[in-house]
Length: 417
Image 1 (cartoon, rainbow, N blue to C red):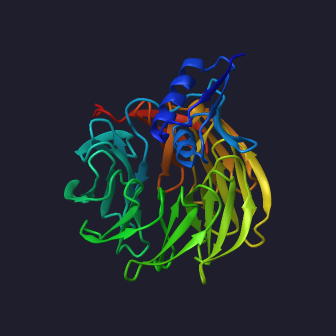
Image 2: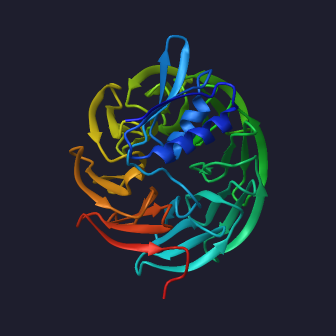
């Protein structure tokens, strides 16, 4: 077994990441361990590599900090950005980004691509408005957002944002759309037709913003500041900053909006914020690389996907106590609860599989192979099917939840016959 020691402390973060990726790919599957001295706490590097599926950890040796790689047989996300983000509507249509700067529209009944719509450069994430009349597409390469009228399938606006806009977040009342920009440390706020409302300064490395169920507050986690910026959605002013765990990435509110649950990727825990006064009331221990939280529709349970420990942590939202740990596959990049509350579907990006978990018993029922690098997912209106974007193969996997089987892999890069 090869043990590689590197001193990358004099390199800027981007070059550190490039060198670690090179080492990982050259040693993958050989049982090697790479320890790289990196200087100060490497939050950007750690989260960036986790997001791409590299098996990485932060370790300390006295005063020194290391990024440690274990290049096992898992597969990081490489190459062109294919189908990654997926949304579906009540009419059974499914939307996903695909190659050649397009969004593909799938008829969920026939499972065929019916149309491609050109968007901006390197489209990453998309989200439907709550009335499903608009689709918002964040374009990380052209630094803008494409607004699509879903009734006509036409682009109605292309609006500039900050650099490399991340996941669009539509407020529950439909009046505002929020897009964080990591490089600019800002959030661009748009109206429903794509008109710019305001640019809000936030912390360092803002990630996935979330809006409270009453649309009053927008909570912006800042991964390197280790804070959440609280934005008053009435006038888009900053109401304050809340100190949370290390490396906050994503946030989920309970259905009543009383608490926000902040997943802290570096410290591996979840901060609970009471929204009435924006104060921290609890910290929930989770797994390594805790990144994506969710709350059940009935508000009883909270969940967080732990990128680096390959499991989901489950807690009781009333007591904030952990009640379970559900093993899943390698690198659970995304998961979602079905609308009928019966299933939790988990995308295991590192091994090209998905797990089907019984949401009542919190037990895994099936592990199914799909296309490479499965990521975001959506459901059919009747909760019978799940549609999973498979980024590296540019496919959407169609999962029969009741039958616990893959019924089709849809190629979304070209219109099928």
